[in-house]
Length: 226
Image (cartoon, rainbow, N blue to C red; front, side, top):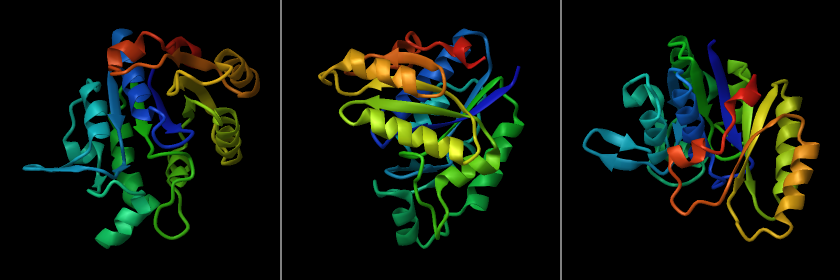
């Protein structure tokens, strides 16, 4: 069965790529072919082959389909700033059609399990009035939400879920990624998220100093997506 999802976070720095890599690893362990893509990325490093983004490379490392870097991350910017600001500085129009065509090509490979990773949270601006969430809508993909568990996570998670559903996309599941191990009333916060988010929890990833895809995969449950 071919499955594809758009993966987003409640904010930036909530471990979205770490969880995405873990999901791809979990799918590979289950015998599925995998493919991950990141349509736009800021904070890329210059190399002899061009700009490279650590998040995109992490997705490629867990993809059984081998594609050229430009197919996985078609729009890359060097400054570690919001994509729309990086695009403005580079004189690039960053709109949905620019990102849609290469992502449709990724989906056309029909890997068993495909993840397209956003940047930051759900409402990340592109050029003009467009948002990265508009790309998810254009692709009509169900969404996986990575919840960075720390103070304020409940409100961020519920608002993100509301926005995803309001945009007409299904929330396929969410992952609790504990980014602050000292979060007060951690268990009560997690229980509230389970009670209030209108989708299954795909796993609870503990705080990991140096998280690997293999470590994260051990805490995820892909069968809950079915």
